[in-house]
Length: 272
Image 1 (cartoon, rainbow, N blue to C red):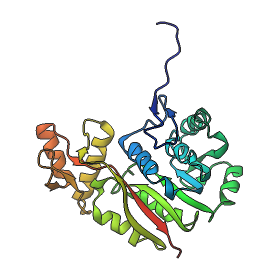
Image 2: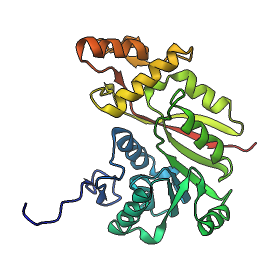
Image 3: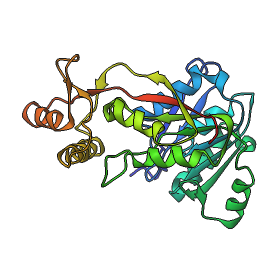
């Protein structure tokens, strides 16, 4: 024991890496949301499509604040609200906003989905309903269903906050399959799907990570119940698409993780 305080975990980005938005340093100590491959492709989408983001924004499930903070660095963005259900995430997001010089352009609220817990926060957010120019969302996989329910919640709820022609950057990784993406927007009135904004190449969906292994097991259970198959690719034959159950079988036999792509998709609110 040295008696020195523990160093906070953080992820840093150079000004060059952020496309000219300046250096970004995101703290994510234990107990808060640490950046994942999905976070990083969300960051890539903001950097590559800064021209789409201006005015008033909302970061749904903001975690430690990385997406909202990066968006707030864009000169044309006036303010970003961040919502998260974990108190420690909201506290570190506020610290990160101050650390990165955008405290005056951000407001982070403890909330369940789009509903803040505080009466003051509920009132203030409701006052902006219908005025948001963009929403950023990197939802986790939901439990006990096909893993897609939080994305349905994000898309349906977005209609109450976006202005007409407002946009939504929504993380949807490849393995969910094209049919779920199609049903996501076709079953939600008033939204137009405009394609993939950012994507990785084929990368391992690392089943050595407990959270991703649990997701794959949930996907396989959904297939077993008769749900639409998932769309992984074979670890050694990238052109071969395989369902979640086959991906798990290969991992258990060979220890090789299936391939997927981390992606961000664009939706636009066109009005009901």
